Length: 208
Image 1 (tube, helix red, strand yellow):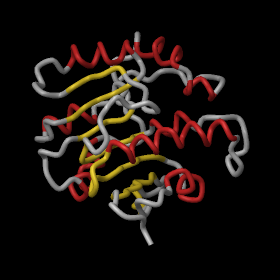
Image 2: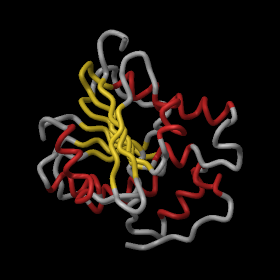
Image 3: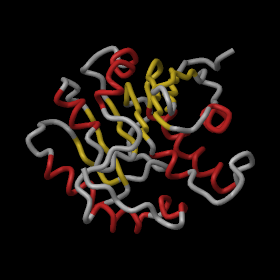
Image 4: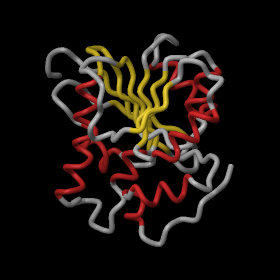
């Protein structure tokens, strides 16, 4: 694993050119947790290894590779970086059936109700990197995050699940995830430093 330098300006994480430059020289990097750490929760929330899975902002994480090697062969990886999609497609060319597609998570080119599972591991956090007040984020940030979540709602099947892994605490994140079609549930990972695993199930009627 190659560790890139942390940018001086945290808003760099929101810019495509930052990622193109970074992925041109970085082979792999896993934000927060690896598949080994996440496997118990993922196994709990993904009922079948035949599930059609959307990996939002896949980057060069090993998560999709490790899941594939554990039997999840129907994974669609998307990222807005052409560089990382090309690199990962070449790296994983022997993992037959796994897709790598250049795409904006805020404007998904998939049909409505076409996925069983959507996974975001740190991608939304990159959208939320800002110098402003975390208690009162600006309207543009709120709108950008809402676009991702709304697209996830659209492409999930009824009964499909949105799984989001982050260091963001519930009082900062739940407001962005809440939708009439689901209830936001939270699990924690780690001991000294907690990560959060948000899980939501899309219902065909608004949650009461």
